[in-house]
Structure formats: structure tokens, C-alpha cells
Length: 160
Image (cartoon, rainbow, N blue to C red):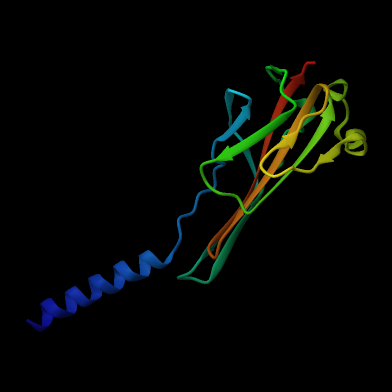
């Protein structure tokens, strides 16, 4: 009886301890880009992540070198919408959006940083710039166990 009780107590303790850790993923969740009635799916790239191991008190970090938004291949999204909204299955802690003019595609990223511009949201909507532009959405998640940042890049041609 004592052995059975000890075994049950150990099993309960193990279940409690594993339940204390939050889920962790080193992948970027799918981004849903909404332009009017159209929804486009976009995969992101994780630029950095860290994970704490609560049992060994260690932390693992990874920094990735990503392809510049100006060196990627895109299928342009054509729209007459003036705003865009985003949805991600995993609620982010922060989001920021910047854009590069389409003519910068293929140019040196260091020179382009000077020419990129940040966009501020208006509620849940983000304004689009006229013409063809490359957009870079930076999204971050953080909890007690892990943190990660992902970049989503896409090309939108906002037509009048």
C-alpha cells in the first residue's frame, strides 16, 4: 500500500511539474493577411529565439541570419484596398511594420535601411502605401519559458 501511494504521489508530482512549463515553439506561426474580402497566408522566418530549461536552469539562444526582404522572390498581391489587417493564431506581444519601395528590390539592404519607413497601425488596421511596396512585419512572443521573433515579408501593389 505504501509503495502504491508513493508511486501515485511521484506520478502526481511529475504531472504537476510538467504542467508548469508553457508550450514552446521555435517556429513562426502562419500569418493571415486580410485585404478586404481576400485573405492570404504567409509563412515567417524566426530571426531569434531563446528557451529556458527550468530543470537545469540553463538557457539556449539562437540568432539566425535571414535573407533580406530585398533579396527575396515575391508573387505580388494586387489590391485596391487602402488598409491591411493581420491575424496570427498565436497572439503576439508586439508587432511592427515597415516597408520598402518596390524599386529597392534587389538593392543593397544597408542602403535600403535608410529608405525604409515604419508604419503605425490605426487600431487593428495598418495603412498601405500607394504603388508596389515590400512590407516586413516583425512579430515577437515572450513568456516565462521562451521568447522568439519572426519576420514576415510580402509584396503588395496597392492600385487606385
